[in-house]
Length: 625
Image 1 (tube, rainbow, N blue to C red):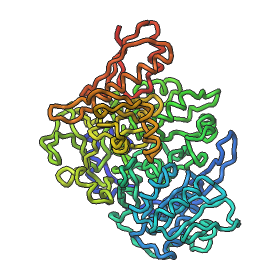
Image 2 (tube, rainbow, N blue to C red):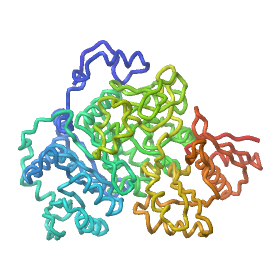
Image 3 (cartoon, rainbow, N blue to C red):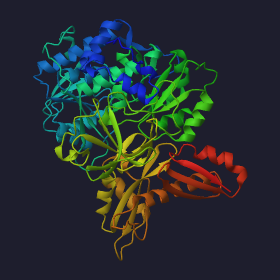
Image 4 (cartoon, rainbow, N blue to C red):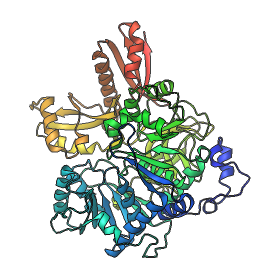
């Protein structure tokens, strides 16, 4: 895929002019591969018997990993695709994948894409939610753990089978393939290992010819209001990101990287998944639950030193946990940088992490709809504090003042507006046509729902969200998932859900409610009601505040920024009070800096302690006398 040109390599794009010169080479000439299967095939030819995946089942210190080579991985992917072909799956048929972070998840994911459409689903969702996603995608097969491997998951699978009538096949990943197969309603049940063993590993029996526009995957994009929102990603989307990532990081060479982000998450699947494999780097998978496993957190620096890891990707909540884990004499000088994404990276957390471990933390920007990446600082390029850097090559990014779905005008340097994007990695739209009505601007730009500004050099700084998603530890929660059931409480007149800043998870769901006249109910009673009526556990509010009236705009709409400010003031005040620090906190939204909180301490000598306590909050802090 190397292209002979006079333009700078992707790893050294430092200016807008470098980007434009780089783009002078036609896209297809620079990046010839059009599908995830072609990416894996190329990697298998190039890296052969080198380990592609290494798995630590428990992540205890010095545990011997289980290895799968590039050639073996491609063979198993072929077998998975051929199994689905034998079951009469075509290119438009979806396969739901409900697996933890184990090597078989890669086999199921890429094999399903080679035959039809992969639909990875968060196993932590409630069965009703999972069934809704399966029914929306029309998945005919479900890949899940066996009964003996996870009793809790097996109970979910049984309930899902009852609520998803379109399912025909249940493919079980089991440690003991010799154990009797369980029954699951009317589904045809098979063991993955046994079923794959009878399929060819050296070719696709279907002789499929891939096109860039073919749909490769369905990704659910977070909380729902009874109908899942499913993004359609193409083979071309995935192939572009993988090839660009490999070229953009070619200066790092080949190495082992931690792969602890789940494969139902776009970043874990593409940039930190197949793109990393395509670059010839080994994925070290640590336990079935990744960073949610205490062993992974406690032994992280040991494994970084042991496997000479140069970099890995994670989310701010994990960085906050790792910050509390000392290196304890482990030589982690091999670690060059960590990419943080999925949620805003607090500047205090970034600074503290970099100072403690002497490693660069890169703040990237992307989303499911952009196949994981939109902006990222290139190479050694210095970007302004809080910036997410320049756009990727071959994409367009515009900051604009909008009038509905029409561009009123483009914003100048430093002027805040809506962030619009288009390019070869932007998804093919949502599965349900009605979900597309408000996200496309002038039928050609995807509205990210984020607000930000570009500087004169083309670096993007995000200042807030035009959309109201609550991002809890990288998990997107639609406020309507909270507001709808809460509003049905007989005592509630109006309910508004917002993201309350949190030092550990980025945001926690919180709600403000007004009560009907002559009604009385306690906040604790409303919380109990939410726990009983909100299907998604992550969306249950951590706090409900009853207020006399909602703040409104001049045209009578609820003014959510004021509620977020109140929630911010509450969260920071409680955090300080729990440490016996008295302070007065005020919060507001600054067009350039986003959410800002001013803290006035009663005892100025406690400022350093207060800064350490609050540095994990995703906002700009100011201390005043």
